[in-house]
Image 1 (tube, rainbow, N blue to C red):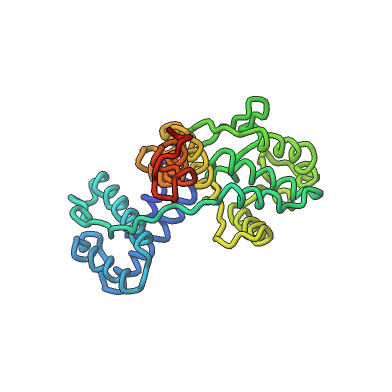
Image 2: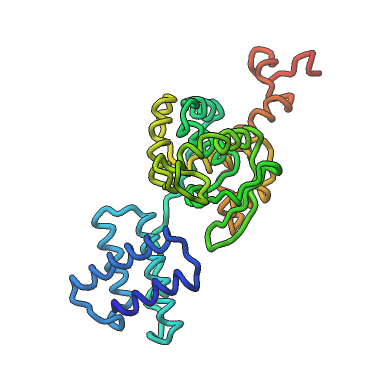
Length: 312
């Protein structure tokens, strides 16, 4: 079993171009599944059938594991067995006919325009780290990058003249993202002074550097966001992905076409982008109330929806 596991991980890295984050998650999820099998004295891959898999899923639910985590673990196991079938190791996938738990649909959290402004204004720009942090915050908000994409950026991928960034996203797919003038100015200020100070005598092609001159990590970005959110008085949980949500939300709320947002986010399916359309309801309400004669409450006679002489 262990031998096939290592071959599968190598397959993910070499042939599927899976990201380190995906490989890490799949490794953790499969090792958890193997521990479950060992505890039940199941030592052969051939012994695993849909009843064993369903028993594992029930065991996870009893432990209080979140449905989203269970769905991810199921996906990892399904992918592993699909690989075994394709390699001729097994005749069929025991997860065929086994469905993942139905996830509760949750709307993505995002920052308001005021919260975004306060976050960006909470930095100390007199330091090299402050210039760096403003640059990556502005870029996250302006482009909708994933934090994994952000920290992997190299200098050669950014063009401040055209205000474009070349990104390799999930599945090693390349796409171009855009940035506005504030993000370009913040990046220029960081590259003109802050980065050289952080780099010192070291060499690095990385765009964003730690104070030790090494590539900035996703974990450090999260820590910095926590600090700045607290300083800005933002009570909601602020993580790097919330700026991606905010990017999409503000674009759609401003009237952007859904397919354009899909392309900028790098979503393979339009359905992944459609979750953000809930925010257009607030904009639609404002447009409706200002445009429809029976909805102009501020001009209504006694608030009963009657049309005022001016509106007629």
